Length: 220
Image (tube, rainbow, N blue to C red; front, side, top):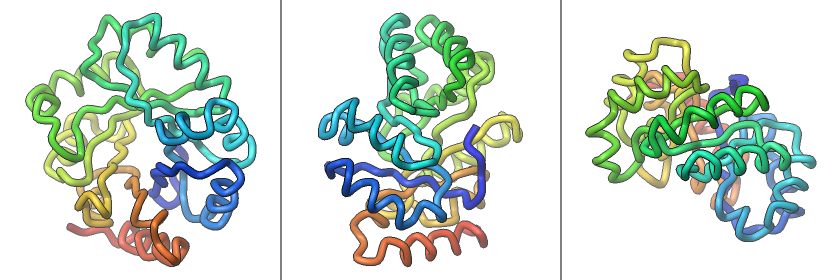
């Protein structure tokens, strides 16, 4: 589980080198609860760069690679990500029970959290049509939580009503994609995920503080 202090996760989708990334993160680390990394880092700094990043910053690292392959590939990727210092992984729910059963157990054994993507911040109508099934699947697998978009507060409320307080809800799409800071929290999310609004700002710390103010007094 991600330890909640402020309720904010940074979507760190940048093509910077490791040194620049570490300098940036150190400027706001006291304000965020986790760092979400993904394909931009993997394709630009590679696995060794990811390892250097996770070693250089003491925080929770969430790999947003939307993993969704057959079982043995999923399990291999989870093992490799653990070796790189990753604490949690976002996986596609639609990969299905057969391909998720083994990786869910393996992740628990390795101390890696699995968060199932069950709705997209834009589009994703096939996900929304199968929301109930995917939520039920996640609870039966014993995952850590679900990814539910800040752009769809009705989905957040619906999922929260289904899972109670036993699962963490992570909400991307705050800021540039249209989600209002604080609304996802007000709707039942544990964490709001913000990226470009902070990264592209001339004053990232000040912007982060402003977002935290909205999260601490959440409303839609």
